[in-house]
Length: 415
Image (cartoon, rainbow, N blue to C red):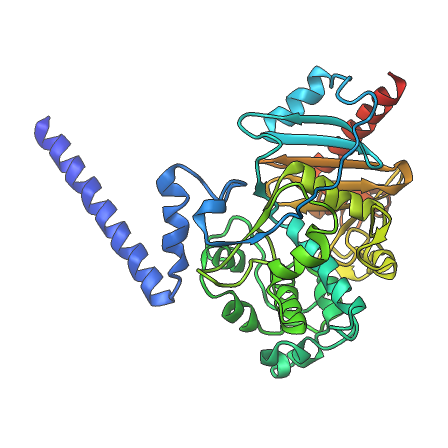
């Protein structure tokens, strides 16, 4: 029996060693050294991927809050309503950490879970993309960028060849650049994984190749957002964090410093994700969007951009349906009450603005539900497409958070 156990242990040890050698050879030969950092900060510490609390995993820059924060008025019935057991189970099963609901500028409801508090900063993931786009519009208004239709190659010299010279800033904003970026939240060999854990963001995004004519197909790619971040830096002569601090963070009276993950020490901000802030400061950013670029009476980003931003491009999509789900770096959903404009992150970060109802919902957490997709057997079913078109590309969770926000608002106003 002992001999059998020893043989099994030897075989297991041999297998593990062989696997480690194979993996290391693959990393070295492929040049994917970022995988070491990825494995060290996930599987070796009991995680399966990035989390909303990865701030200290990377170097980061600081987006300083102003000396005086803006006051968030609380509704007269602030936190006077209870959410139903069914809704509570829904939000808690998805690892919700913060849920805030506003009517206009007034905070109606606010709740935190676990160790997450009003002071906790957490990763925005792709919510940061919208902030980057707002900074692009401000740079245009400031005369630092000529227009949204300017060639990317005017700021990124590597785009002066390979057919990439035809790509414009608008193509990046509308996710229609035609570049070959592989978007994946799960594949450790994807461009997202290398950008998240790697140390050469500029080299990585500028080595992208053109695979189709720009301006033809909506295809969500984080590389587009990263390029926008570099355009801001080239156009303004300021780091992304510095420009965000000056043009937005201090102007909205943020309560807490924000932080932006860098690809290396004194390196570049991960513009496609990874700005960290508190729930209430995400609320201030949401109010800026809800109020069409205004905050406390000051137009922070231009009104003309707001109208372009929330207008879906109508481009074709990979599922063959014209795009009605995405504008210029913001998601758009046609709810029965009117258009919903929202930012979202891969772990279920949401800033949801519903102008028709003057309603704002902030949800932070560690999980999200899958997106509504067009089933293969329904791609030629015109009736099914007509009935469900507006849902395609949006998470099932979005619909629940909208409904929950509306219920909280209704109950609060009736108190």
